[in-house]
Length: 120
Image (cartoon, rainbow, N blue to C red; front, side):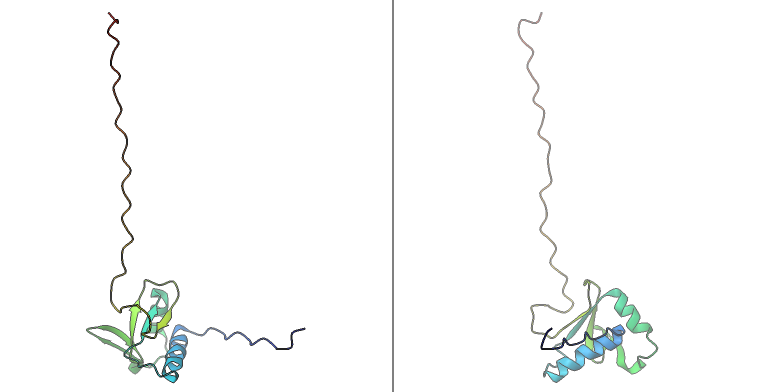
């Protein structure tokens, strides 16, 4: 047997609970809330907005978009909701770089064969 007992996995809560947990962890590490960005899936944003346990004061809207607990929320474009602490190259509100264009395949033109001169 293992000498160390494995740490039990933390159970996932609602999207509001998860976001609050991530923000509190970043606060404890000394990250400013202005530098943070919650990058959430559309499903998690919808769940956050509809959660009856979330006080109305925790979610705010402004010209720069939605904020949860003072942290900017980017909606969609990710497969799993995460908190960007401002220490990556991610720029809030910037459109992702489009993939490079693929060259279009072209057909080779058919070469007409010349009729033989003796075919009369």
